[in-house]
Length: 335
Picture 1 (cartoon, one colour):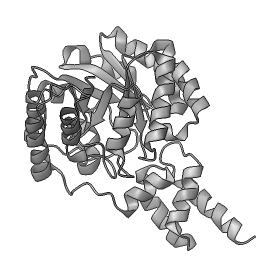
Picture 2: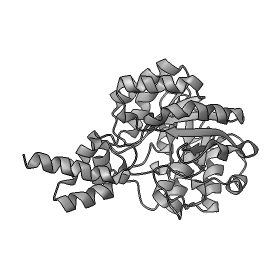
Picture 3: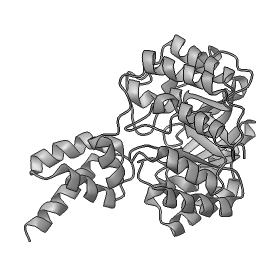
Picture 4: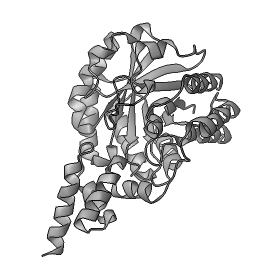
């Protein structure tokens, strides 16, 4: 089995440094990963992130034509950008066929699935390969996930990723979801695993065992919260385990990871109280400051607030829902 390895440091890693990668950072990451024969390098967002808007975000948060034109040429790796249809209209992709990018990754929550097939078709009409990254899959029941997969199948992308956006899933849950979506779509399946519970590598392996063939990862795990599966770790276990085949040069990937650790990453990727709380309570990591403030104001335990918030299955980061969770808890305490 030869999984496809995609590195998303320059896109997802921007959550750690506001996408403030220098020109040297971008050139070093792309050139070194290409030399390592990593299959796909995601170089940023086109049109910005859907969950973290920033007036100071760096170039990889937008992937302008100028940014893309300055990327080093690659001999092995395919280049990709991510788009969030709710913030990036498909008309904003018109220049991509003239750029080094050939893969557009369409990130959508399950409740936005109805708009995905049209976006896939429009990107394909531009001659671009497509993937759909289905976010927050921990918020779907098996029946709901099957319904979403059938919606996506109306214009099936080249790859469909399941994103454990809040790092809340364990391997059995990952395995079940990969099998369900794979059976409905009949196209390659990928996994984007966050590490809030320390299970990113275990969940990636469970996905591969269930039939997935694409892995997302980032150097040093650089991403939101507890981060992702680390690219260097993925390259290592794909090389060490005889059941897998890979053409990736682990030493070169480790060289890229050392550069990121020394020159780019603001701090080591933690799996601490805040990251674990977001994973256990199944909510977006960016809720944490809102939870802390509201819990202080209402005199509540932030862990309990987070747990109640996760049960509400919020669509995005909606601070008003934190107050709703607090009021529910206070109402129960005063009965």
